[in-house]
Amino acid sequence: MKFTASAIAKLLDGHIAVGNKDIEVSSFAKIEEAGVGQITFLANAKYEPYLYSTKASIVIINNSFEPAEQVNATLIKVKDAYTAVAYLLSFYDTQKREQLTGVEEDTIIHKTAQLAPDVYVGGFTYIAKGVIIGEKSKIFPQVYIGENVVIGSNTCIMPGVKIYDNTIIGNHVIIHGGTVIGSDGFGFVPQSDGSYTKIPQIGNVVIEDYVEIGANVCIDRATMGSTIIKKGTKLDNLIQIAHNVEIGENTVIAAQAGISGSTKVGKNVRIAGQVGIVGHLSIADNTTIAAQSGITKSITEVNTTLMGAPASNHYEALRSQAALRQLPDLLKKIREMEKKIESLLIL
Image 1 (cartoon, helix red, strand yellow):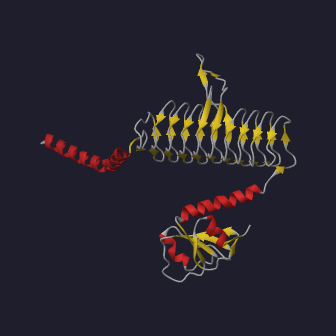
Image 2 (cartoon, one colour):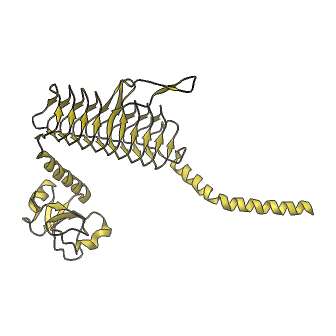
Image 3 (tube, helix red, strand yellow):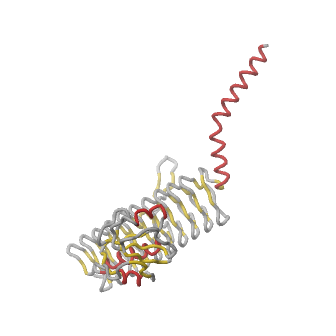
């Protein structure tokens, strides 16, 4: 696909500040690597020197930016270059996907499944009975969709995703490869002989609109009721969400985090990588949890930043870390004092 500078400027609600409005581009690149026929952007001042040497045909810049030297590329000015490029990338990706329709060979679709006419289904996909898939959704190759799953419109299920029975997925959702939605929750009853009896997990998973789930994520279905991922939430790769967890709207969770069963996470929460949260807790709205933190009790105060294991207030944790760094020197001083005391006792 090719786009002219004037078409891009119109799409981004920007204007052409310098250059040829009819020049065409067909791909994206970083500003330091871009070539002829490619579009790039400048949002960070430290990359400004590349603006004067880049071979890109079009560069997107902020309205407030004024070049200090001559620029060979066509410049499109926008309110926020970074946001504009994110929108343009999304638009480009959507245009490519919308060209995909129809059902490829070597798929198995149960006769009771209901697929909108413009749905795309890739090869070697299995769609069980009672499944409903909405308009313009894309199911890529080697996907498994269990019985009575409902998938909304404009949703994209990437290759190798496994979706268990009764899962409900909303509109404009993206689920990346290798992710498993609706596997058994981790429920076992210890017995007197040391063995464990499995607790059947009869609930489901509900994923609301505009959620994005990374690769190799596991979201367990509820023991009873639903595990719920609410609207606008973004999950990174390699995350474990246990049974009956609820994730609030517009929450973001980075890679390798794990949330134990029945924990309720509020909206607009930010959870960094490798965070562990124990079960049956509540995390207040607008909480920020730093990487590798361990959450062992509920967080009730909104707009809190926590770090450490077990986690504590951000500033208190930093003070504790600073004190820990002083321990070797303090230990050395104590030993010196002990020797002095011993010598005085001998005298």
